[in-house]
Length: 390
Image (cartoon, rainbow, N blue to C red; front, side, top):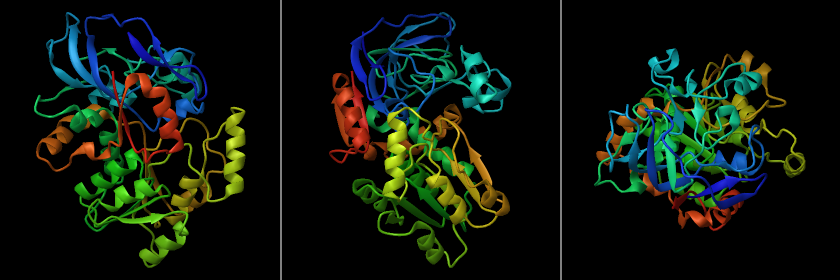
């Protein structure tokens, strides 16, 4: 089959690879009908994620049609349309039983590598680092899905791929980001980043009952899209001082809840610091950047909650721990427990409370994925979200 493979920093290739096979009775094989490039795939593309190996098949936002089933699979039959969560979870360990699917104790076949770096192993993830199992991903013609009865969700035929594809990752991620913020009806919620996860976080904050939502970014097309979501107040970080703006908007109190939807590759407002970060990245030095986190810590009201759906891959230098501790901030973060939210979010789509296809700016053949990565990374051609069609 054909797939997108990783060969180093900014080197994605469309190549012929081995077809997947049923390896365990709990596996299914799907023929991928749609996949997508995620913002966290850019961490792979830019070489900031440890544990990658040349030739890895990437991609963790796939859906498709079931074409083969292991003998123990009960929930699916051939021909079913399914969306596949990026988290691979066994369903029976302590963490899965407590609905913390991204912390599964069993699914990662390379737990020793994870323990070395993290202290414990987390769940395996599709198409990501070997710290998360090195499991072949979904930017491919076919995909093996382990623990099939625990992971995928069957979707009805009347809903096109474009409306349900993002159940694989970014819609649940935005939803959990808002849940982690424990949004109350009186809350002002500030969101850093209006990329795909940030936009779903904005929608989720409103759907979960926020009184007020304020969002920041510096990409015009993202800002415009955020501006169209209910009464979201949107600001360009190149035009305002974020802290001063938030103090003005909240009469000096600060937002009740702050959400970092940016992650490891945040940019500074200083061109000098950005040049330094780029230089470090070019020589493969750690580049998990503190700018958004520190701005959030400074801006969040005392006793507030900080939610972090943005992916970090390593230590964050110059993290403002002192201000965070002294302001009594609560931090909630983590990879998304996707399976926990799938039925609820599919219902929201079927009830037309949200149409996730609003996010798609480009749909391209799988063969054009390497060029699409460059476009997405460089924010060319008003690129917000790329869907790949094998």
